[in-house]
Length: 214
Image (cartoon, rainbow, N blue to C red; front, top):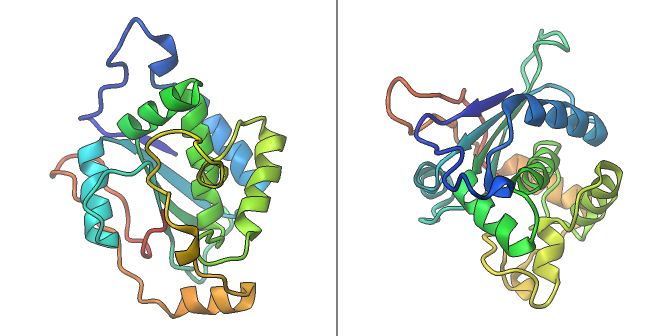
């Protein structure tokens, strides 16, 4: 499901078609296709929101007082649910940040949002590029080729001089290198913080979820 923050301006520059927000239908079709490619079971909700709103979420749940491009909130597994009722998690995408990154990479906003959706889906599936030994990067690369998407977020960090602002960028020597088993155990051991949307009453709200991953 694709949700739109009422405060978000879908097309701040009418003269630039590539910067216009794609339709919810277009993104929903891609979301289902990408979720199938990732082999992620369960429903996913994607909130397209403002930089201010995603900065609030980033500060509240990750302690980082800055806007970012995408945050993923894996859902707690629920018992006695049918496949149709199963929830995989939620995702929040900062559209203004995505719009700037699209301009820097030289492609349309619709392409950038699809890249962010794929990246977020991999996090919902349990991948963590900040803790693994390259598994998520390799998986993302294969899926991007399958879905016909350009260079992804992880590859931009690894490419010297690739792009400008990137909220995922961090010194490589500080990246933890854990075996997949240890990485999974470490993630499961972390306390989970329910996600309650910080948008004002009457706006779109996101159900309770685990701690987000960038």
